[in-house]
Amino acid sequence: MRSKATATPARAEEYYRRLSLAYPDAHCALNHRNAYQLLVATILSAQCTDVRVNMVTPALFAKYPNAAALADADRETLEEMIKSTGFFRSKAKSLSGMSRALVERHGGNVPRTMDELTALPGVGRKTANVVLGTAFGVNDGIVVDTHVARLSKRLGLTKETDPMKIERALIPLFPRDQWTMLSHLLIEHGRRICEARRPKCEQCVLNDLCPSSLV
Image (cartoon, rainbow, N blue to C red; front, side, top):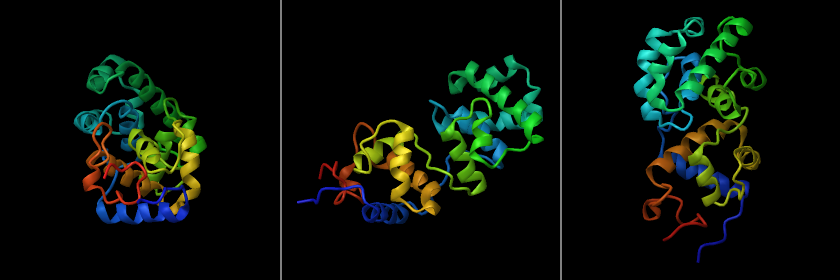
């Protein structure tokens, strides 16, 4: 009989170890070359697949290669370019406000602190965590997207459903230097194996530890 999973650092360490072996190439799926591009792509990724965002951003970055260019973008043109990502009007507003703030407050550069990032229009904690961890290697927190939220609950790491509360529950279970990669690993596992509707438990490297395993 499988032992009941409890949210302990030891169990979390074993989860991380196995997932690291299973997905040695796990990384951010949003294509980008710098922090500015990652920030834009992450804003566009809200309620949209990374695949779709990656289809949109090449032309977007070619037309608006930096914050100054994006800040001067015609709103209708910008909306049309990002329309396929959904919620394009609100996203265009966020991109315009964010880029203007970068130019006015930070000389067009993306800041490297949580407070400065979340002070930008359209940038919440999740987006800031993505940029800090992936672009700058700063482990200030843990990115909690739909995959991370689902797997955290299934793996018995937390019973919380609110992203902020999930993040707070995960932080003490994993060393700080693992926080960014943890999200990449959970997202990769969520996409490949631990799917929302039909998890492939028989293929899961965690099925002997996971309290939700069906095998």
